[in-house]
Structures are given as structure tokens and as C-alpha cells.
Image (cartoon, rainbow, N blue to C red):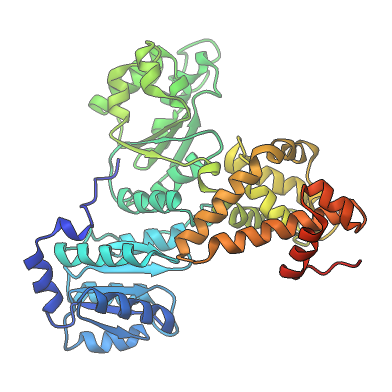
Length: 487
């Protein structure tokens, strides 16, 4: 698992140290072409008595860097002219221990990995909480050190998308783990993208130019799995007419991804443990040991601790594989990413099928975001592929969804609207909005009145009866809320 980060709260640092940092010359540089972002930081840092300087471009900051040395740099990635990543690179070349915090509104794997491998201190996706940003700056001021520098990143995987905090944690982990040879255990429900993450770890590692070999241990018959993993010699068993290289041999120098490791048979667990322990293995029927130079990444949707207790999985192998654990969130834990993913998969399906891309209506997007998607990202991608083929018009409406997806509305009618209300409230509170109660209450009442009037053909007395209010109250609400209805 990722190492625990220091407590970013002000109380975590001695008051004298904070004052010394705050009074030092130009300790914090803010670099962003967005005037409103610069203004927010100026106000927040002034309030916290932290000296600062703002720049509207990376070039301005680079010019100042020739004669000045900041304590911390906070920079956007995408700006006119030089990018924040260029600033990061040149700042690191000039001052190797300078903490650089990268922020961006484009929260994807490429930016996260590029930032970390370029030596960024931390990665701050927009929109951010101002207090959190200030706490992060305080931690950087206190630490005044950088994360591990790494090589230029390989091409990113565009299919790994996410702006939700849970996915930002995954991106950070990939950035930190990519340069390591440590064994990684990826856990998460089926369909969360475990193989994509394993592939990303490989492609951003020093082994990127060598093979990435994936095998689903649950999909291969028990009697064939040993040969599949380790290969076999000619004549090792009936039908073995030639020598065959196994997946370990095919992945030499690169990465071997063992998916659904929890279903591996007991005897294969023993052989795998031997490879991980001493680095050697034998082909089936072979007598000469073969040295393995392979990074192993395993994945499972099962609770391996429980399987160990049940005697279904070797405890020593579990500890060998579980050096670093990376948990992928389910789609229902990152609902804010559903619109982003759905639109991406719709465009991707259109490209693959060489047809015009369709688009979602806003009610469909909101409806999809309210679903649990037990099949996670894979289920959402399959749905978008189905809609690309089956939806009759360019714009996808609720009635275009498959029957089994529309059937979810039965469940939503009871509790789904409450969950949707909770999510809306969370979003607005996170933005720091005010008068939330009034606005949501007005929207709630307006929706009920419009639906009731539609149900009764505009007859207010009947609509008021259905809503359980008086006709005069209904009339007053129509006026107050500015509802445009006829008599």
C-alpha cells in the first residue's frame, strides 16, 4: 500500500517553524494563466500570512527562477506557451529539492504519471478545496523535499479515466509504483479495470520496452495451467510433441500479470511460491532450472485473507504477493466519473464501428450516474457499445436504454432519488455554495407541482389534492416559483 502521508494540518508543525517559513522571501510561487485561480491563492495565502508571488505563465516563472529561489511552486499544467510540466522539469534541473505541486483540470492518468515521474511533490486536481491546497503547501514548506525523480513517461492509457478522488489516489499510486520492481497485488470487483492498471504500471516502468504478458488463471483448465505458466519439454506428456515456452519465459525481462490469482490450484500455488522465493522454475518435464527476471503483478476480486483462513490459498504465497496492495474503487464509489466514462466509451465505440458518434441526453446522463453498475466499468462500456449499435437516433433518450437497465428505475423510485439528492448536496457543499436549502427546496417543489399539473391536465384543484395542499397554496407556489402554466 502507499506510504502514509504526513498529517497536513497546521497543528502538525511547530508554530515557530511555520512563522519562519511564512516570513521568508517569496516562499510560494503560484503559476496559472487563470486570473481567478491566482486571486483565490493570493487571498488564501495572505490570510495565512504566507509570503507568495503569482505568475500568469510558466515563462514568467522561469525568467524569475534565474535570479530567485522559491520554497514551493504551485503550477497549472496547461497554459499558453510553456507548460507546467516544462516548468517542473527546468525547476528540478536548477533546484533538485524544490517541491513543485502540479494542478490541472484535466485529471487523467497521463498527467498524474507524468507529474510524479517528473519529480512533482504532489498532484492537485481542479476543482480543489482551498483549505486542502493551503494545507498541502504548508506540508511542502515543512518538508522542502521532492518525491523520487524518474524517467520520461511512456505513452499513457487513455481508457483509464477518472476525476473522482478515489481514482486520483489510484493515479498517484501508479505514479509512485511504476519505477519499482516490487510485486503488486491489485484488488477490486470484476470490471473495475485491474488489467488496465497492471498494463499502465508496466508501460510507465523501466521494463516498458519488454513484454507484458497477461494470463487469467481462472480461465485455463487446471491440468493445462502448469504448462501454460512454465512451459514444457518435448515428450513431457502425451501430445507434447515440441518444447513450449511458458508465460514466465515469454515475459522475461518484462511483466507477468496473473489475473484471478485467488482461483489458482493448490499445487500451482506451491510452484509459484518457489519462483517468487528463489527466482527459478522448471518447465514441465524439464531438469534444468530457468532463471526468471520478471515483475509479477497479481489481481483478484476475492477476499484472499478469507481464502487463507479457509485453507484455500497459501498464507506464505499471499504474503509474497501482497507486498504492495492497490485497491480499485467500484463504479458506484466514483459516480461522478460515470458521465465522463460514458461519453468516452460512446465515442470509442463509434470509432471502432466506424459510425457517427451518438450523444446522451442530460436525463440519460443523470440516470446512468444514479445506477450501481454491478459489472462496473466493463458493464458501462458494454452498454455504450450496445447503444452505439441499437439506439435509433443521434441523441440517446431513456427509452433507448436496454430493458434491463430501464428496469433499475423501479428501485430508484424508492431510494434512488434520495441518493441523488445526497450526491447533489455533497457537490454543492464541497463547492462552498450557500442558500443550498432554499435552492433545492424550490427545485423540489417546482418539480412536484409541474408533474402534478401534467398528471391532471393543468387542473389545479385536482393537482393540489394529489399533492396534499390547498388550491390557494398551490396558486401561491406557482407565482413564487415562477412556474409557467395556464389556467
